[in-house]
Image (tube, rainbow, N blue to C red; front, side, top):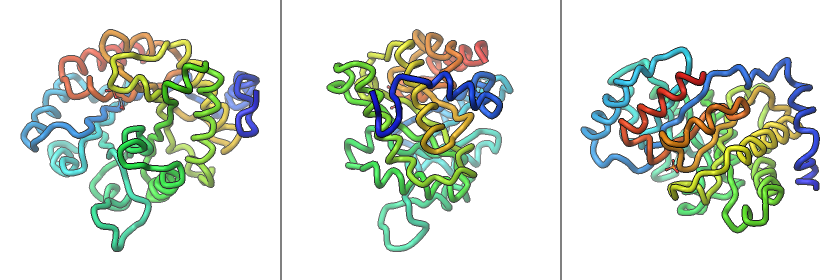
Length: 278
Ligand code: PGA
């Protein structure tokens, strides 16, 4: 089985071993990314949510936490503390000019934002973002010094055909989304595997399938773009009841969490799991 020139199910262990000197993923701390999406509705609620989350010992060397509020709350949350790692949920590819409504990577960087989520399936769906647009965003964000969390994942129709079909789909996304990324910038790249059918549905992936996909993503990125040591996260209905199943796998470097990240108690339990497993 070939996926855009890459073997979908062979030799990923070989490639990962080959790069083992550089690839520290197995020893890396778990990364939790809280994707607040279009929540909450007011600045006061956003500050309250942030403060509640901060009560869970979030400055812990055992794991890394990134909070991704809507653009409009970034600055106020940054003003509450300089300690937290902030992420944005999107970015535009141009630096400046006549692009009404857009936000540049430089603007984010200037606010003290460290990470940016790019290519989320909700933006692919509702905003009709294409892989070409996503690729331009990835290049702009990396070029501005941001860390990129690139989201990839297959729809249910593809997954129903099996994991090999899903790998082929994800491999094609990676090929387009990561086109022309400079090798020097690849250490700032994280990929989130988010099967579309698992996002916000309460139906999470099977962790062994996620492990296989994670290895495949590392393998493809390594072969195509010489990306080594890259973290791959899982996202899709992660909650306190299933987080351990994913985070305990050494191949899965963390989680991108939507719904559960805006429920402080629930999110606190996930934080504790990440601390224990890191
Ligand atoms: P979910 O969202 O945890 O609510 O499924 C994950 C995501 O969309 O990033």
